[in-house]
Length: 118
Image (cartoon, rainbow, N blue to C red; front, side, top):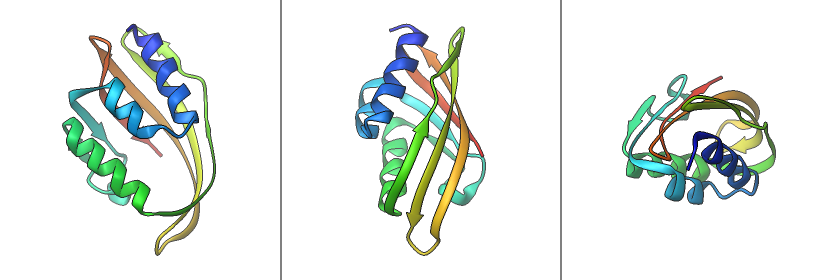
């Protein structure tokens, strides 16, 4: 898959709420995930299994989703970026609206890096 194809598929699946499918089909086994801070768990996570565990922990921390909006991707060479706005109630933290820029790097048709800025 090209970077553009990966980007469009990621956005399509995320808009459908299929985060597990995104990780399973679009991420490399040695992918890395970098958060802006420690608010969502470990700042740096390496390897697909660790990223899946981080995602599962995030989802388990959500009491209720109120809405989300994901922009179309902006693609350049082997990278793409998008914005993601999330409105959710978190266990012990109440309702929060979050807006972030998500940047992805692709190699050999798979995401090898995701980094979040919020």
